Amino acid sequence: MIPRHRPPFRMAALTASMLPGFGPRSVEQLEQDYADTLNVPHAIWLPSARYGICQAIDFGLGSQDRVYCPAFTCKVVHQAIRRSGRTMELVDCNDNSLLMDTRFLQTQLGPDRQPPQTTSADGRRNIRGYGVVLSEVFGHRYPNLDGLPLLRNAGLRIFDMAMCIPTARDMQRLVDRDVALLSFGLGKSLYAGWGGMAFTKDDWMADRLREQRDQDLRANTKVANVRQVAKVWLRTFAHSAWLYKLSRRLVESRSSVSSDNSNPLSAESELLTPEWSNAPTTFHLKLAAENLKQSASFSRDRLEYAEIYRSELDHLTHDAAPGTEGWLTLLADSQAALSHFCLRSSLRDPLRQYLWLKGIDTSVLFPFPEGADSNQLQNTHRLTLQIIGLPLSNGLGSQNIRRICSLIRDFIATEYAASNRPHVSRNAA
Image 1: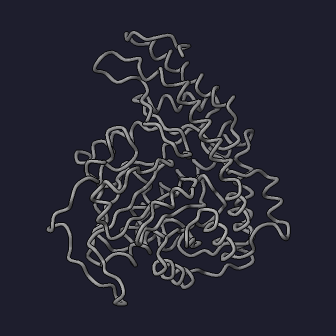
Image 2 (image 1 turned 90 degrees about the vertical axis):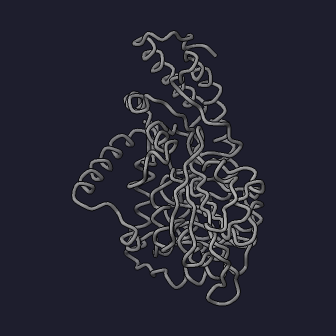
Image 3 (image 1 turned 60 degrees about the vertical axis):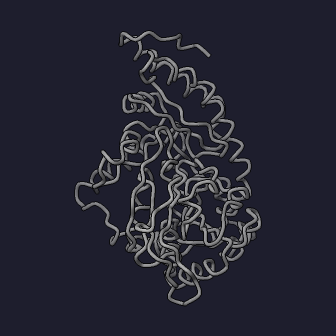
């Protein structure tokens, strides 16, 4: 079974990370490694990316300021914004993009939507009205930021790069009090078992984030450390091809029982989860450092696999009558390494089931935001019903990518045969 994503390391790397002298032994050393590699003045280890979103908003915006955020993103991003106490305004995505609507980003907010400039509590910072969270979901990046008035004039910009493999070029985008955030959590491209990293060029913001982190972190007991290390080992083992299907079924079964017996996670209950307070173990720091060393190789793999997906599947997007959608829609090409290769299909659910039965797990991730108006967020609503993320994990191999593409072509051929629509050969290049 090919997992929808798998940890970037193998069991050998886990074993090596337990040996003395392997990698950094302190948070400060890991921070310096990331700052040096990415050529950014400040890298700050955090218990999670969601923690970083909440704290950056607290420090960078006034209490009455708005935060503009994509509707299509992880629900914990929305929870972090609500936790900050600011007003959140959801923004729709483009017609065929995972990112916020470019037309909205090109707007110039009028005075009625921009609170007057205020001064921070310490009297040192001028706060300017509103902030923007830029969730770069599945690794897709926002281009041409300087030409977008909403972003150019924002008092705070947060680059939510939780799913990305960050590069020095990404850090060049940061100005003023911008904060970029990376996650080491489960399913992320640089999964290391725990935590995240904030990046900024602003000395003041970096100092505030470090001070707040040190205040909020809860010291781990020896038992808690052992449990955290064991969890990483078990997760890595569970992603073995021969064990993955069973482990997925167990997880889904437990999730179903949990959802039947509990209320939806609220912004307030989020504070009680470990992602807001757990400190890292030396084990986690070593894995995060090793992933950083291998990140260029990880990126090359993912870019190569994405190109194979695109070349193998592109012709399927054209098999439609004039004025109608094809069976598949590919997203615009990305020059960045992605966490998954995403496509859209009106037959997403049967396609996912078909691939699962053939030994391929796929990702959906983001549901439509609870309580949001689908009429105002039409593109997001449609996207949440159509998006499917194909595996891109490093080390997957080009042969497996081509196998997945062949299975998708077989599925589409079967659907065409069951319909009256004309189509080209499934073997067309």
